[in-house]
Length: 237
Image 1: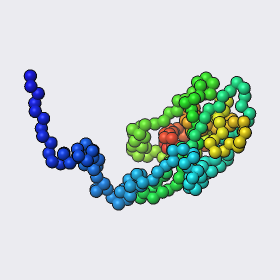
Image 2 (image 1 turned 45 degrees about the horizontal axis):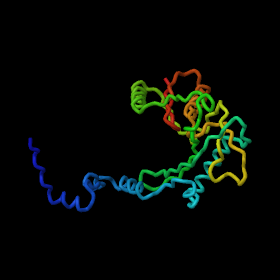
Image 3 (image 1 turned 30 degrees about the vertical axis):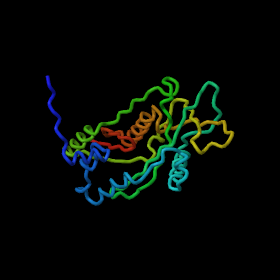
Image 4 (image 1 turned 90 degrees about the horizontal axis):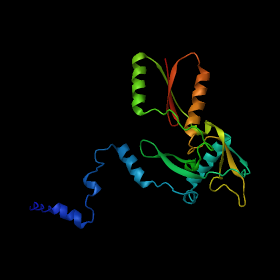
């Protein structure tokens, strides 16, 4: 049995192979049909660089300001208190995560830094009990919005800054000091009172806080809460 002969590549294919790139991106992707705003936005996505470590971030004033704003928010909400680590406990770690928020036209809206707990090191039954939080899929959001428009229900949309910091912890969780904020020789750790990004129970605690607050405001109406991260939509009917 003989195999079919291989088709000889065209001249353009030969040029591609000599360049060292078999399938160059410009052959399949083009920004030519994008509007000027969208073109600027996509360009900024590739030009702007986000730091991957604390040592990189502290070299730039905009990231230092973002870090201090996050620390101020953590202190204002009473997220933790500094205590000696109990002998029978071990602290979980934490790290800084950085993100550049862009406007629709590609200009920088703000620099955002999150202090994220390393929740993967939490122990079930010790550091957390329940983790489930009812977060809606987008198809559910679309269905309920369609029903609200059809039946004339009232919609209330809100956004909560540092949403997870409003959730209160039921367990005793200890965390190492944030990178860059521990003095030399410091032996104390952070005892968490509020949920922090990265904790396994953070989403559940935030949803519990939000739903209880909405129920306390208006107990005479039936409503559904659609929760997506730090944004929420309340449908009253």
